[in-house]
Image (cartoon, rainbow, N blue to C red; front, side, top):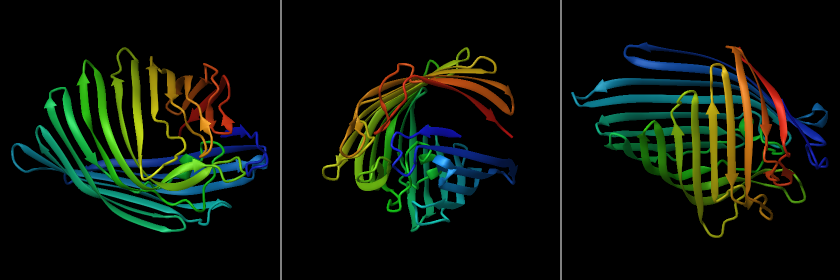
Length: 364
């Protein structure tokens, strides 16, 4: 459970608000008649509450997923793999800020992987269905190719457009955001990514370029005269270029880092919130025995915080430590914003100065 005080008690959250989540899952796997498979079922409960414990949004969700694959040999040099991956959920929701109570989200990917060494090709399609107060259905191509040009380097290209269905159990964990009755589900007409993968001296790197074209891209803004955030839509085309680097764990230590540059193409003059042109992050992780120590660095250039105000560039340093007591219990602590910088969690809600806390994770 996370609790946040509200500097604007006149908005729908009142003087404070909290969110909490509970989930449980069970799964199994096996092989039958040459088919490798696994399946999982989950239950999830999410609640967003204002002061006095009054619910703003709640969701009870039942999820299920399944994966199956089988290998076929076309000849001595060619292998074919058939893959089916399906997942979905049905839920019951309660909120004054939406007009529906029984959403569902289903997705299935059917693909064939062809191994023509040194080239690997994946071809198939993705089927999606989603319901809130409207019905959405979509069938999209699922294409991917990779070419090992050197023992340590490969070129790749992916084309995997999709419906970008919202998950409020994730989106509403960021404080002071409410769902929207009017927001539409974004749909990608293009999701193209190409790049170069390299693995050398126990370091993996991905140098990439992407192009996206999204109808009804979802962004955050504030209703007129209000100090909370909700979702709006507009069409958006943009490119992204960047690099990610990850070291293999060496003597219990590894580093993960990345940088990206995004460029808005249109259509027409475009104003989008929380869309910095430049962003970078790095994590330094040390895991001796049952301990885990992590230092995370996050930075971004300035970006619109609302359609009318700009949130400045920032650098944030967060520290975290935890110890695994047994298979079911982990304790830890964190120190956030170590640099004590003044930056925005969301516009109107600046991140706290140096702050710390303790946490415990219990598994069943």
